[in-house]
Length: 132
Ligand SMILES: [Fe+2]
Image 1: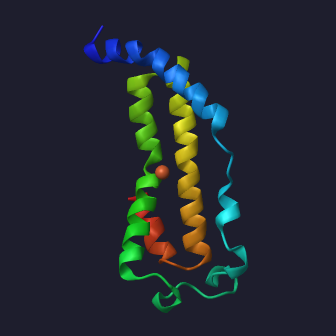
Image 2 (image 1 turned 90 degrees about the horizontal axis):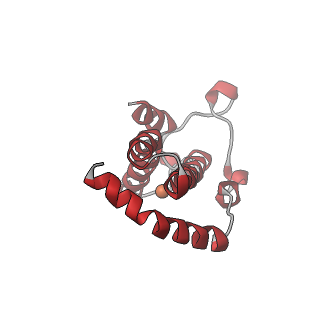
């Protein structure tokens, strides 16, 4: 058994205890609650207007920060693969990996919905960057 596996095994009870503590006190939240949907409107494909820079109320710094943060969240499948491969999908570690992945996905949902609805950044550029 590798040193890493020994370490993960040794930490399993600590993970189990803290996972239980977290799940016992975590308050459910929903990304849609944080999106100002009334500000949204159709894009050109559905008869509306496509994005243009003057529509954004974000500073260049805020745009760069939001795009970087969202692309980091969008890379979640890769993180999940790496973590699940190393930590496994059984026991407390496995439960934690699944829970962490689902929670992180919420962050991406909230940020993407917010940016698209408020036209904060170019959604085409954002999607191309995500695909890359
Ligand atoms: Fe996150």
